[in-house]
Image 1: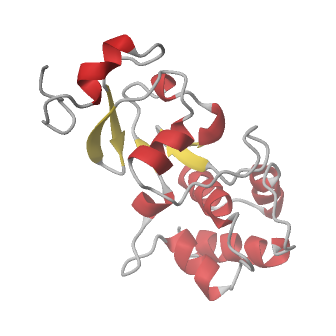
Image 2 (image 1 turned 45 degrees about the vertical axis):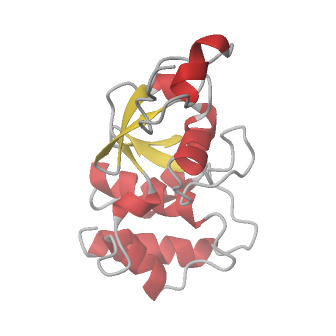
Length: 177
């Protein structure tokens, strides 16, 4: 048996891959500035690869249909729903997750504004709101209320923290976030 290019061990998944239907050659992804090699079926949702193979838990499974936004990531700088994008569609575009946006010591301006405004209640959906707001502010640094509401309109928060979320996005925009 050959050595697995992922873990270097003989008899690893690479050795089995040709015999398993749906498995493909290793895919290379750049996630949060780091190159990764993953071995997933090409149709596997990007969300599953991020969570299960790369152990990144910012993007969350919410609806599985791309309708709630809990799984939002940046793909080539654009906010997208990772539950509805097959990993093979990523190509050479860089992926940024909530973990890559900022850090506990140096939060992104949108993350900092959400903290200061106490914009979340349970926190399950926070990933979608922050990632979408950050993409909006990258594209439109000083959006008006209508632009903010339009950008965030496809997201769901069951806790009803919408007014605090809007304040947080306004605060980040005021700081040039």
